[in-house]
Structure formats: C-alpha cells, structure tokens
Image (cartoon, rainbow, N blue to C red; front, side, top):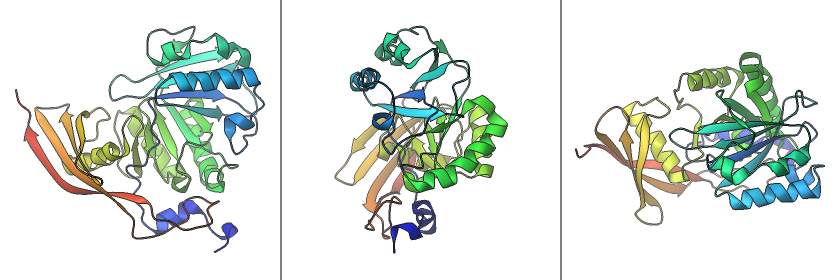
Length: 306
C-alpha cells in the first residue's frame, strides 16, 4: 500500500482501535497564537525570533510535564496576540490569558510562576473553556482533512473559544478535539459529536464515546478512568479523584479512584497488550505496526474507610 492511498485515521476506525489511554500527557500547556503557516515542526519552523524560541524552550524545561502548541483562528491577531497558560488537573484547573502587542512581550512573563498558580504576571483568569482542534496538515494530512470541518462547525457554536491547533499527538485519531482547562482529549470527533462533546463539557460532563483520556493522567490511569466510568456510569468531569496507581508487573496496574458522591472506592485492574492488528499509525508511516491496547481485567467497588 503506497503512502498516498490511505488515511491513518480511517485505518484506526476500520480496525476498531480503542482510543482510551492515548491522550497526550501534560500538566501545563502553553498556547501561543501564531496565525501564519505551520511547518512540520511548529515552533522550530516558525518565524519567531531565536530569542523568543529560546525563551519558550527554557520555560518548557523549567515547568514539569509542560507542552507548547501554536493556535490560530484566522489570518491575523485581532486585539493583540493571545497567549494562554493552562494548568490541567483533576480539581480547579485554570486558564490564564494574556494579550500581547508583540511576540517579544512574552519574555516579560514569569511562565513557571503562572503555571504554578503563584501569580498572574499581567494575565487574567479566563472563565471560558477552550476547545482546540488539531488542523496541522503539514504534520499529518488527516489532521487537516478531518480537523478543519470540525473547527468550522464548532466555531459556529462556541465562537472565540474554539481554536485551530498545531500537533496535539495521535494523528490517527483525527479529528482530535481537546477541552481545556481539564485537558480532556477526544478521538475521531465529527461535526455532530464535536458539538455534543462541547455541550457536555459546558455542563461539566464527560462523554465516553471517542474519549482518549485526560492530560494530567498517565496512560494506564486514563484507561482505568474510562473503565471505572463505564462500569459505574459516572459522567461528572470531577466525579472521580485518583487515589493510587500501582504497577503490578510489566503489563498490569491497579488503579483506585475515590468517588465525589459517596464513600466509595472504585478499583480497576488494567492490562496493556499489543493489538492483534497492524496499521500505519501516521500518514507518513512506511511500515505497519501494532499499537498498545488496554483492557479491564477486574473492577470492584469498596466502601471507603470512615
């Protein structure tokens, strides 16, 4: 099969690949408006000055588990250049929004302190959610083909809260939709499902269909959350709190969550194994490969000690 004859996202769907346990991991996300063409490597290929690139790379190095994405809505920056610092976590995640006159103004922001919640540094807390859709076609054609219609559709409903994004991870799951500040990742989102996901997020609910996981969790915890929510029918975005994630051996984990609505502990034993199928995992792939897939080995509810 030649590289031009397939779309990795369609191959993933045809194989019925499980998407849970695949969200890109990040506790802090830096989102910088850059309304110009993105090269395959968004930041290095941009026309930002070497000084600003170095500043951003230093900020990423100093903030644990941090990621940088370029975002845009159109061909210009109306009302100044937007920059967001997002802290993803189970409880009280937040978005700090900045409006810059020029990119050099970034160097005046104490990004580590903002990401830690110690100061605003001239920004302001945004009360609105952010919806990011990966449209990074120079990275993978599926991101553009499946992401752009989703962006245009959701923009009609959510307006300025919707942004096109550079590569968020998981080309084969396009259209990729991310709900910040909680950092909820969704796979294969369509115009219809994207609107449903956005509506649920505004209602503080999580949709399990097409769910990849949340960015603040490790992959096995993401999968365990999916299984617990499926077994116990828990929709609230903050309906669970992680208590413990313990690796039993190379492929098994025991993950325990507390409940937000009662003295119950949800315990899930999950296992990861390679898929039976082999696929091209990006549109640039030249070889098929197996992918990790999680499965639930055991689930039980335990009364939480008083």
